[in-house]
Image (cartoon, rainbow, N blue to C red):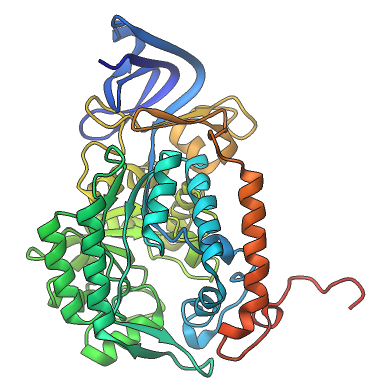
Length: 484
């Protein structure tokens, strides 16, 4: 029988069965991988054989659920993909910058990204992540070694986008490749779902609404129901994609997903990655009800605000999706892989686009980053501190530079906290980070491997760019070099 561990903290964000609640002078106890008790210290009775950790200057919160992350390449976006964008591509980096970066990246670079990102996620509070990346077996093993809970999705698609002139987006189709990819994903799930004491779970990801055929989507939806796993696709993520789907089908991306049964009562509980361009978005400016369709379908939107904000794009507006009944979750998508930044951008941009300071609140985005993600995954044992839930616990220092003065835990966390305020991370009952140290992880070594990968990649950019441009032409430096 496992020994009980109890943390007696100054503040706890507990879950009362309906919503998060602030407990002053609270206790969270856990045995093995499961929380056994949460509540005020005044109501707690110490069980026998219990280790009590006194933490008066700490805030305990549930672990954060990152529902959309590309960790196998996104660290190499840094200093390459920012401050560039073409209006003919709707400012998206998908059609010119991403193929250039991906094509120049080697396998050692992918491994360096996965190694670095898994540690980065833990160090910034992610305890569960949905990862759609190459090398799923390596990715899985690295996550399990660190102790990160991961939903692994070997991606697949029927086609790929490209440009050969920097003006138009074209598609190269290979339906068999999509079917083969789906078969590999199913095989991976059947083999590894539940591995490493349940830390590793499988998930399906037909990659993008505009790169997968109707047949592939229908087969993937059927497989998700048969395997009882979540499914996610990228949809309504660019103006180019929106117009492409209109031209093919006379329907918006969301309407088409409803038409083919990916969304709706007959479909799986689907997750839409981004969903940032419904027909009501100001950049689209059409009559329609895409957001209502998502809400009526019981769908989740995995909102990753930073990847779009850096290109001048924002979801309009976070609170409007909630009002329509959409289950909102939060993801990082790209570097930095920190849910603190993702929550902060979601809240602030929601206020800007909604023109209302009292909406898109800290409580709403924190709930999305916890309960919203758990709901999407069909897990009532994640995203909360409650008896019976998995022991995924974050311990924050509330007396440091960024959290002082401390009054409202969620406002302090969402609007002021920094990653260094997070001191201890427990996942599945295992302490995976203590005083910002992860056993067996040397961030200096991981950073050096990532730097070397970046230098190789930048040198090879002309080989993968349609215009054979050098990296400094494709992504101009912010400053001229001394002497030039």
